[in-house]
Image (cartoon, rainbow, N blue to C red; front, top):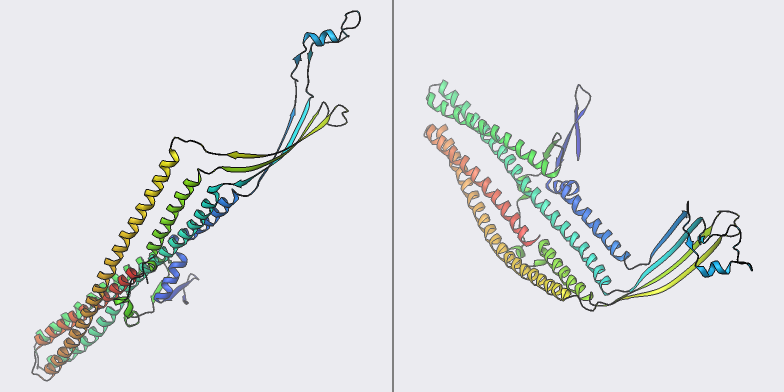
Length: 443
């Protein structure tokens, strides 16, 4: 949602974009350069399928050439031809020459050739491998999309945390200023000391400095967030979510359910890699099979001293059809070594996949423990904050009734501020723990 606000003296409007977490993820997925590259890789994989399929379709080529002899090649007639040309008196005809040319000045040749595969065991294996490569590119796109989503969430959460911190600080500043004003009035009446007023003024000043620091942190964090999303740095971005809307509530299966390895995009990529290695092994084996192809050629040749109206010119057609068989017999055991290497590559890929599965088990187990710990800490810090709020409220009442001191108020404030910060940090840790659990589970 775009909101245009204000027109400057230079005539342009400033854009203001309000964005939720879901909108931020969608924007990043639509504008990420990495996603665009992954989508282009899928298109490249599609074209690779067409390219592989084309090798099994008929290949038709046409050729044409024209030559004009500026000096025609000559041959020397043997003596038998010379003797046969003599008359009864043994004389040669006028202008007779033993050098003669058997070609005419102009030669044109055109041909069309068709060649098609009849049988090649490696063709269908290569075609299936190209299709698997497309699946691999799609899996990599899904993995990249999930990675972008996780990065956006990780960058989005600190902004919410800092914004929530601003709200708490504003509330604390407002309360501290009210208490300071009340204490100043009491000081004017001679009921409290200047020290009491000074302490509250120091508290207000420290809170305002802290708020300014967090404002600058939000600006820096927001710039990094925009860069991650490929969002215009000059456009104002406003976060719509609050901490209450993004606090996670995990499903029961997330904490205790069985593990589905195929929900992890990386595991699916590894699985496709194994299938590609197995196809490569089959492809090398198929190289032992003979290959058969059909060839068809039609050719037209023209010769003549003149291109037009030459009675001595002629066209000579030629048509050829044939089969070509290629059968490997002995290659010095090169293919055997290639097959063994392909098998070894497949076994290595399977071992790596099993290793990755074990690492997923460990990652999920640790993520579940971390989430439970973060949930317990958040509940504990929430209780501590509620207790600190009650202590601060009691200290205020006692102070106003003249049975408490400003030092007691100051200590209660510090305890409350610390409890609020600790609770915010616990909430943030809970959000990060839930994100880590989602990543581990492939959600």
